[in-house]
Length: 295
Image (cartoon, rainbow, N blue to C red; front, side):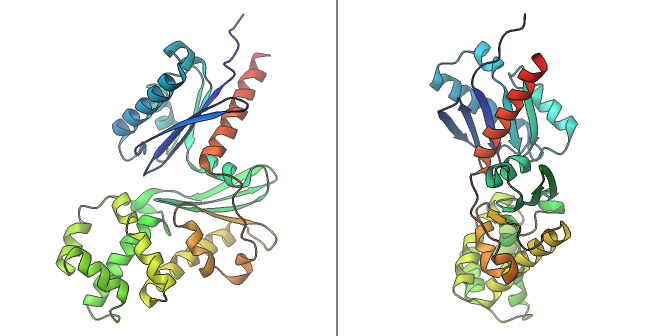
């Protein structure tokens, strides 16, 4: 007879900036936070962070290696681009039962629960998701080189690029551009700094844009409008219609609310939970699937 599954589950929400790892039973959630866990950007570093967080959480809860191995685990991670990478990661983790997906399903489930609607997630990276009749559809999330439009890193990168347009007299110098030029020591400093910036570094500049957009800075507003136009166009292409809710999630996502078309603004709703909440729910569903297969 096979051993019964552990009554607890483990869930991971891993992004390009931070990774949260939680153990949950029916009434209690314990969690730790570690660094970036983007397995596509740096597989080995992501493994180190995941193992460190799992070990830290296990020690806190008094769980030995054999107990951790029995815990059903669900991981929603940035950078999971397919089955091969997921299987490679599963091979280095200590679990008997593990499901590894990219970070989009957990964010969608956390924001909407089981309800129909759309999610426009804009953190360090970005993606869009729709849930209708229990079916999920995703778009974007292809990383900073080929995608992640409207993300924080996209906004920061665009802010530096548009600031250099001011140097070329292609548009008037704005207060935001002056702030960025001062921060980096002029145009040469902008170019030099940008050449070594990571997506997280670019994303750290996004608050400069949102702050000045809120003050009416035309250059900053134009960046936010461009991001909102991208989000609106993608949601329409995915089948958004009036009456369907929209959740703007991630660090910069909610800042696009004022720049979306008025009809979409009417559908804006607060997310029910965050991606870790969604990962825990998906871990529970995974646990139920395993139990059903054993019956």
